[in-house]
Length: 154
Image (cartoon, rainbow, N blue to C red; front, side, top):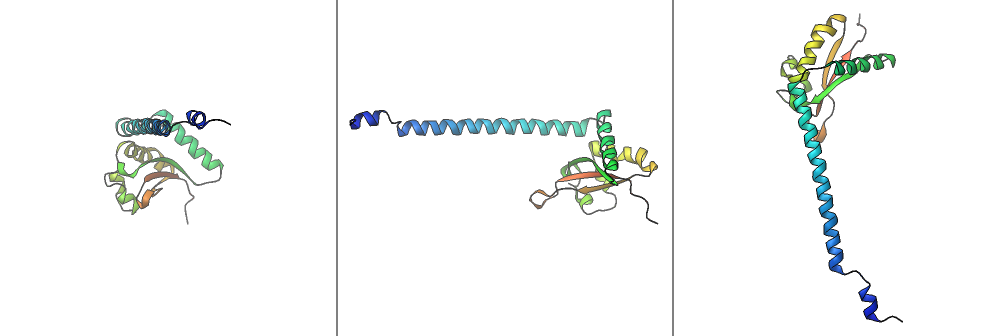
């Protein structure tokens, strides 16, 4: 038989377990902060790109691919762009309520994309629908721009 002293000396102390649990909690907090920091940087980069840069050839190529894929699938519209409704001057209210003049609430690349639509796509028979595409916590989330090519109704 082993003595009680031998069995307690091989057992990890409660203090050591508490320290280990605290170390693990601190590691999880550090990991969470790194993820938040990375997400904040990603969001800041997106905001910078949306408000400061113009639509480039790469984005135009993506839009063209989306349209061609939708057409190949027999569809008459394609989601070509999305952005947070908070980027509209009214936080997406006019778009959500389908109010006339919703285009005036656009900013940044959304405004530029609408201008390109008016200049290039509309004269070729395309339409553009803007709508709120998600409602996180019941509030308007992202705006989606849908390029449409539905046949005219007689």
